[in-house]
Amino acid sequence: MPNPVAPRPPELLSPWHSEARAALQAEARAFARDVVMPVADECDPQKAEMPRSLIDAMAAKGWFGITIPTEHGGLGLGVFEYCLVSEELARAWLSVGSILARGQGLGTQTLDDGRRAALLRNSAQGRWIGGIALSEPTAGSDLAGVQTRAVRDGDAWVLTGTKRWAGFALAADFIEVLARTREPEPGEPRSAGLEPFLVVKEPGTFPPGMTGQVIDKIGYHGFLTWQLELDGVRVPESDRLTGLYGDVGADADSGGFAAVQRGLNIARVHTAARAVGVARAAVEDCQAYLQEREQFGHPIGAFQALRFALADMAAEVAQARAFWQQVAHLLDQGEPAESESAMVKLLATEMAVRVTNQAMQLHGGNGYTTERRVERYWRDARLTTIFEGTSEIQRRIISDRMLPRA
Ligand SMILES: Cc1cc2nc3c(=O)[nH]c(=O)nc-3n(C[C@H](O)[C@H](O)[C@H](O)COP(=O)(O)OP(=O)(O)OC[C@H]3O[C@@H](n4cnc5c(N)ncnc54)[C@H](O)[C@@H]3O)c2cc1C
Image 1 (cartoon, rainbow, N blue to C red):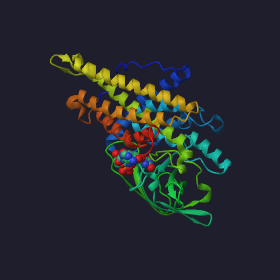
Image 2: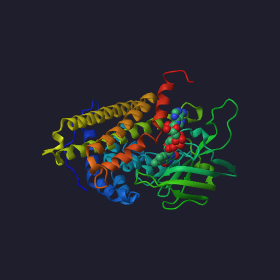
Image 3: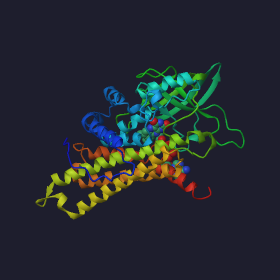
Image 4: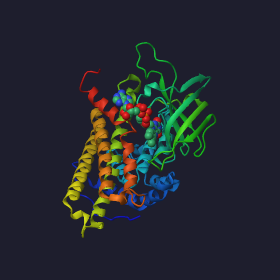
């Protein structure tokens, strides 16, 4: 597979530029090119999970703890740096940009402060990497419809139900499972009674009472994605979590989810940054291909229609990057930025679908083969408007802050 070393399209100098950020970006960019890309080229066609050695290499750089405070062993940086690294990793392989979200303190929100501190340290070191099991066969956008039951039994909870789309569930150290502990009282939001539970497990196995079946996806390889059957999974009371952070596309206004809003907003801007990474990959490959491929006696990059198409793609990527950087900055300043997070998720992911589609067109027949990476970018970009809350759900969040609710 050709590995184009095209000059990159121009990058806007961000108003939030600093030497430290430029150094982190350069480090992640080199890692993505030299370490991630060869693994992606080998594993993606096999629909294989990323190797543990790749995760360990990212852990050694401290990237599972970018946003974890230094006193807990993290890098103590912000959402901005988290997204900066993720964009670079996703430029090589979307799933590698995603796995960082499975550290960053996920699965540490326990009631016991001592345990929480220990888990945070493990999370920062890449030794506490989680799966997230919120969605179900009948509850996706509408997470308040979750039917998995948590029933109290002595000092434990017993979980029973079916979860769908749980990425990385087998390889994980734990799975966060959203379950219903009680029915909502009259007047309460439908999400009342939904609580996250920490299912601790050995990587490579499922715990007693849980079985899993791999869902055969068309992209987003590097993660295996599971349908899980829970039949009496026991969770001690101490592993009932106080908060939740992850792939939620649910109604963020409902009271039960209010506490997780910041986590949702971070997930949305993180998805936008990953989408920018994938779209940038498509632009950079086109930049090389337009110089390499000749027709009618010229490189196809001589045709103005194609030059202008490339310019439009590069401009769209630059715009989306500037937007995620703005929203990440707002979140780091402690702003709620709810609409902005939904807007950037919506715009950046829709952009990635358009740009990767155009990239395939510019590659002609060669784009529609597995000999070039552009088909991978196209398949992976297509997911970004669906997971972490669909485009329609983002539009709903934005419009609900503009108009009275119907
Ligand atoms: C590859 C992959 C990985 C995933 N990883 C995880 C994971 O690790 N953990 C996890 O818990 N989940 C995960 N998900 C689930 C993901 O979050 C859901 O797929 C997503 O939230 C959409 O839910 P759904 O698929 O049930 O679609 P549905 O909710 O059934 O939506 C179908 C269509 O209806 C539209 N729609 C729904 N409600 C409305 C509305 N109110 N207004 C307008 N339109 C609406 C949607 O936008 C969509 O177009 C993953 C999904 C995929 C595909």
